[in-house]
Length: 114
Length: 118
Image (cartoon, rainbow over all chains, first blue to last red):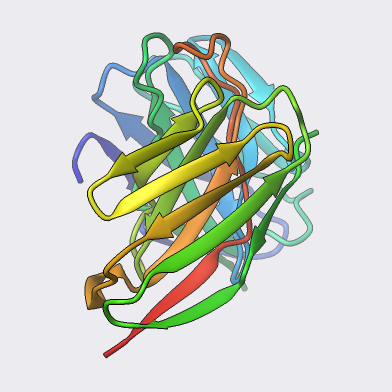
């Protein structure tokens, strides 16, 4: 289960506050992804990045922001503009070239808005 | 954008029987279809994947079939065991090249809760 880590495991936020979720990987993967999982739902793509200093919006990017200053790190900021931020957030990474396209997931961060 | 539908949402089978989960996708450009297993409280883990240049792939008790014309793909688990109980997700994506390469993010189905009855 090593290789991609997320912190914190649990996070509580008051309404109106921005919070940043950490995602780090030591797999030397170029691509990194952020997904949101709600109960009874599949994972939905928030943002992804294929290379350093570049990222793309996913299906539900509104109210979120990301940065990719280092290959190993892809932090996600949940802003106060996100109307319903309580969810389980999963980060993933994958190779960008070659036949192995598996996305490896981190253990997740459970965010609760109080 | 891509839309993935997954059925059934819950599937209960007797231990030793087979289980089949079906998914459909909307974007004909999708060429990569992985299946993930997620146990309660844990991260999703890849169990098998298939690319659009093949119609079937098998790995021990698990197999996946793909029908590009109909835009659907299925997961087959034979000789089910208690440890197969979990939520299974199908997904679709576009690889830059079907032989491998960078991918956009995955579009997931809503999941199937597989229950193996002893």
